[in-house]
Image 1: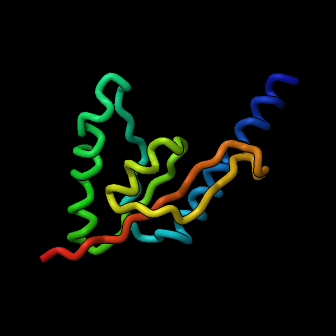
Image 2 (image 1 turned 90 degrees about the vertical axis):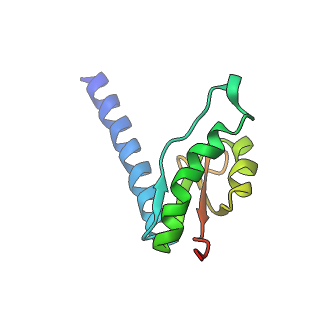
Image 3 (image 1 turned 60 degrees about the vertical axis):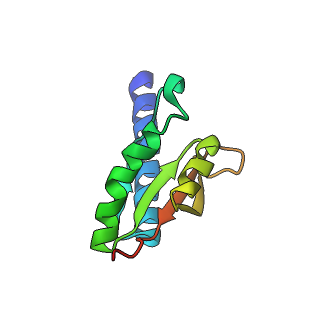
Length: 114
């Protein structure tokens, strides 16, 4: 019974994080394209693969006039996203405590389409 209780507690903790992030997304970018997961193998980082992947969706958001939104768990990737026009809008401390891991929420406003 203890393992079930621990698993249940963990599931509730994950659910709280998901609900918190969804609430924050609704605050910062209620109607947006949400970039969920992007990653590249370290062997090909810096070759433009990540940029090409992300940039494939940005024109669609621009054409529709909606922002793009993401959560970043890696501070080293912030410069990458900033170069693509994303700006930090919120820091979410997982677990609520200032020493906990941080997810940086970022938003990119649509660019005019001519």
